Image (cartoon, rainbow, N blue to C red; front, side, top):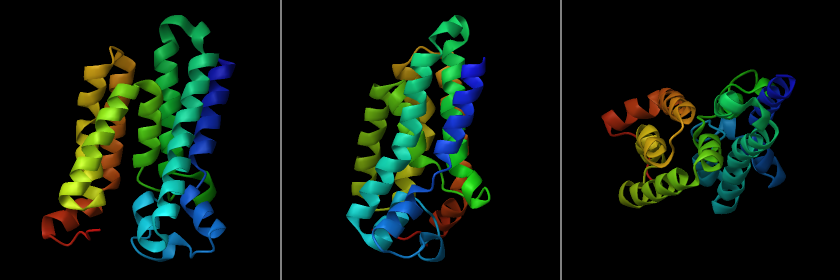
Length: 198
Protein backbone atom coordinates (compact mmCIF):
# COMPACT_ATOMS: atom_id res chain seq x y z
CA UNK A 1 0.00 0.00 0.00
CA UNK A 2 2.86 2.38 0.78
CA UNK A 3 4.31 1.77 -2.69
CA UNK A 4 0.93 2.48 -4.25
CA UNK A 5 0.42 5.74 -2.36
CA UNK A 6 3.95 6.86 -3.18
CA UNK A 7 3.54 6.06 -6.87
CA UNK A 8 0.13 7.74 -6.98
CA UNK A 9 1.64 10.93 -5.57
CA UNK A 10 4.69 10.66 -7.82
CA UNK A 11 2.46 10.25 -10.89
CA UNK A 12 0.45 13.34 -9.95
CA UNK A 13 3.59 15.42 -9.40
CA UNK A 14 5.14 14.23 -12.68
CA UNK A 15 1.88 14.96 -14.44
CA UNK A 16 1.96 18.47 -13.02
CA UNK A 17 5.20 19.35 -14.82
CA UNK A 18 4.18 21.90 -17.51
CA UNK A 19 6.34 20.72 -20.40
CA UNK A 20 4.76 23.25 -22.77
CA UNK A 21 6.04 26.05 -20.58
CA UNK A 22 9.42 24.36 -20.07
CA UNK A 23 9.91 23.82 -23.81
CA UNK A 24 8.85 27.36 -24.68
CA UNK A 25 11.30 28.87 -22.21
CA UNK A 26 14.07 26.50 -23.35
CA UNK A 27 13.56 27.65 -26.94
CA UNK A 28 13.38 31.30 -25.94
CA UNK A 29 9.68 31.61 -26.71
CA UNK A 30 6.83 33.38 -24.93
CA UNK A 31 4.62 32.06 -22.16
CA UNK A 32 2.10 29.91 -24.09
CA UNK A 33 -0.57 30.80 -21.55
CA UNK A 34 -0.59 34.38 -22.79
CA UNK A 35 -0.78 33.76 -26.55
CA UNK A 36 -2.73 31.68 -29.04
CA UNK A 37 -5.26 29.45 -27.35
CA UNK A 38 -3.60 30.05 -23.99
CA UNK A 39 -3.04 26.31 -23.61
CA UNK A 40 0.22 24.55 -22.76
CA UNK A 41 -0.40 21.65 -25.10
CA UNK A 42 1.14 20.44 -28.34
CA UNK A 43 -1.25 22.30 -30.66
CA UNK A 44 -0.63 25.74 -29.17
CA UNK A 45 3.14 25.17 -29.08
CA UNK A 46 2.97 24.24 -32.76
CA UNK A 47 1.17 27.46 -33.59
CA UNK A 48 3.53 29.61 -31.52
CA UNK A 49 6.94 28.01 -32.04
CA UNK A 50 6.65 25.40 -34.77
CA UNK A 51 7.11 21.66 -35.17
CA UNK A 52 10.18 21.23 -32.95
CA UNK A 53 8.46 22.77 -29.95
CA UNK A 54 5.32 20.74 -30.60
CA UNK A 55 7.21 17.44 -30.79
CA UNK A 56 9.20 18.15 -27.63
CA UNK A 57 6.05 19.15 -25.76
CA UNK A 58 4.17 16.06 -26.91
CA UNK A 59 7.02 13.73 -25.93
CA UNK A 60 7.36 15.32 -22.50
CA UNK A 61 3.63 15.24 -21.81
CA UNK A 62 3.29 11.65 -23.06
CA UNK A 63 6.26 10.33 -21.09
CA UNK A 64 4.96 11.73 -17.82
CA UNK A 65 1.99 9.42 -18.38
CA UNK A 66 3.95 6.40 -19.58
CA UNK A 67 6.77 6.31 -17.03
CA UNK A 68 4.75 6.17 -13.78
CA UNK A 69 2.46 3.50 -15.24
CA UNK A 70 5.42 1.33 -16.25
CA UNK A 71 6.97 1.84 -12.83
CA UNK A 72 3.69 0.95 -11.12
CA UNK A 73 3.34 -2.17 -13.25
CA UNK A 74 6.74 -3.34 -12.02
CA UNK A 75 6.56 -2.30 -8.36
CA UNK A 76 2.93 -3.16 -7.60
CA UNK A 77 2.89 -6.72 -8.96
CA UNK A 78 2.61 -8.04 -5.39
CA UNK A 79 -0.92 -6.62 -5.13
CA UNK A 80 -2.14 -9.60 -7.18
CA UNK A 81 -5.88 -9.15 -7.81
CA UNK A 82 -5.66 -5.40 -7.18
CA UNK A 83 -2.64 -4.91 -9.42
CA UNK A 84 -4.45 -3.71 -12.56
CA UNK A 85 -6.71 -1.37 -10.56
CA UNK A 86 -3.70 0.14 -8.78
CA UNK A 87 -1.80 0.64 -12.04
CA UNK A 88 -4.87 2.23 -13.62
CA UNK A 89 -5.23 4.65 -10.70
CA UNK A 90 -1.58 5.65 -11.02
CA UNK A 91 -2.20 6.39 -14.70
CA UNK A 92 -5.25 8.45 -13.80
CA UNK A 93 -3.20 10.43 -11.28
CA UNK A 94 -0.70 11.39 -13.98
CA UNK A 95 -3.44 12.77 -16.22
CA UNK A 96 -5.09 14.59 -13.32
CA UNK A 97 -1.72 16.17 -12.58
CA UNK A 98 -1.55 17.46 -16.13
CA UNK A 99 -5.07 18.87 -16.10
CA UNK A 100 -4.88 20.21 -12.53
CA UNK A 101 -1.15 20.87 -11.97
CA UNK A 102 0.07 21.70 -8.50
CA UNK A 103 2.77 24.00 -9.89
CA UNK A 104 0.36 26.19 -11.90
CA UNK A 105 -2.43 26.68 -9.35
CA UNK A 106 -4.35 23.72 -10.78
CA UNK A 107 -4.82 25.32 -14.22
CA UNK A 108 -3.26 22.97 -16.75
CA UNK A 109 -3.71 21.39 -20.14
CA UNK A 110 -6.38 19.19 -21.68
CA UNK A 111 -4.80 15.84 -21.00
CA UNK A 112 -4.54 14.46 -24.54
CA UNK A 113 -0.82 13.66 -24.76
CA UNK A 114 -0.56 12.46 -21.16
CA UNK A 115 -3.61 10.21 -21.58
CA UNK A 116 -2.01 8.85 -24.75
CA UNK A 117 1.16 8.11 -22.78
CA UNK A 118 -0.85 6.22 -20.16
CA UNK A 119 -2.70 4.21 -22.82
CA UNK A 120 0.59 3.40 -24.54
CA UNK A 121 1.88 1.81 -21.36
CA UNK A 122 -1.35 -0.10 -20.68
CA UNK A 123 -2.24 -1.24 -24.20
CA UNK A 124 0.22 -0.43 -27.00
CA UNK A 125 -2.15 -1.75 -29.68
CA UNK A 126 -4.95 0.52 -28.50
CA UNK A 127 -2.54 3.46 -28.51
CA UNK A 128 -1.30 2.62 -32.01
CA UNK A 129 -4.81 2.47 -33.42
CA UNK A 130 -5.77 5.75 -31.75
CA UNK A 131 -2.61 7.36 -33.14
CA UNK A 132 -3.57 6.23 -36.65
CA UNK A 133 -7.08 7.62 -36.20
CA UNK A 134 -5.64 10.92 -34.95
CA UNK A 135 -3.28 11.30 -37.92
CA UNK A 136 -6.02 10.44 -40.43
CA UNK A 137 -8.50 12.81 -38.78
CA UNK A 138 -5.94 15.62 -38.66
CA UNK A 139 -5.02 15.10 -42.31
CA UNK A 140 -8.70 15.21 -43.26
CA UNK A 141 -9.94 18.07 -41.05
CA UNK A 142 -6.72 19.99 -40.24
CA UNK A 143 -8.20 20.73 -36.81
CA UNK A 144 -6.19 19.59 -33.79
CA UNK A 145 -9.06 19.67 -31.32
CA UNK A 146 -11.47 17.69 -33.52
CA UNK A 147 -8.87 14.97 -34.02
CA UNK A 148 -8.33 14.80 -30.25
CA UNK A 149 -12.08 14.67 -29.60
CA UNK A 150 -12.57 11.80 -32.05
CA UNK A 151 -9.82 9.83 -30.31
CA UNK A 152 -11.28 10.63 -26.88
CA UNK A 153 -14.66 9.27 -27.99
CA UNK A 154 -13.01 6.13 -29.35
CA UNK A 155 -10.67 5.55 -26.39
CA UNK A 156 -12.98 3.20 -24.43
CA UNK A 157 -13.72 1.28 -27.62
CA UNK A 158 -10.04 0.84 -28.41
CA UNK A 159 -9.24 -0.23 -24.85
CA UNK A 160 -12.14 -2.68 -24.86
CA UNK A 161 -10.95 -4.21 -28.12
CA UNK A 162 -7.31 -4.62 -27.18
CA UNK A 163 -7.40 -5.26 -23.43
CA UNK A 164 -9.34 -7.67 -21.23
CA UNK A 165 -8.84 -5.57 -18.11
CA UNK A 166 -11.99 -4.08 -16.59
CA UNK A 167 -9.84 -1.66 -14.59
CA UNK A 168 -8.19 -0.35 -17.75
CA UNK A 169 -11.58 -0.03 -19.45
CA UNK A 170 -12.92 2.00 -16.52
CA UNK A 171 -9.84 4.21 -16.68
CA UNK A 172 -10.35 4.66 -20.43
CA UNK A 173 -13.92 5.80 -19.78
CA UNK A 174 -12.71 8.25 -17.12
CA UNK A 175 -9.97 9.66 -19.35
CA UNK A 176 -12.36 9.95 -22.27
CA UNK A 177 -14.81 11.96 -20.20
CA UNK A 178 -12.07 14.15 -18.74
CA UNK A 179 -10.58 15.00 -22.14
CA UNK A 180 -14.02 15.75 -23.57
CA UNK A 181 -14.81 17.99 -20.61
CA UNK A 182 -11.55 19.87 -21.04
CA UNK A 183 -12.46 20.49 -24.70
CA UNK A 184 -15.90 22.00 -24.03
CA UNK A 185 -14.84 25.43 -25.37
CA UNK A 186 -13.42 23.77 -28.49
CA UNK A 187 -16.73 21.98 -28.98
CA UNK A 188 -18.59 25.29 -28.84
CA UNK A 189 -16.26 26.77 -31.46
CA UNK A 190 -16.59 23.67 -33.64
CA UNK A 191 -20.38 23.95 -33.62
CA UNK A 192 -20.06 27.62 -34.56
CA UNK A 193 -17.49 26.87 -37.29
CA UNK A 194 -14.92 29.06 -35.54
CA UNK A 195 -12.30 26.49 -34.53
CA UNK A 196 -8.93 27.34 -36.20
CA UNK A 197 -7.35 25.00 -38.73
CA UNK A 198 -3.68 24.29 -39.29
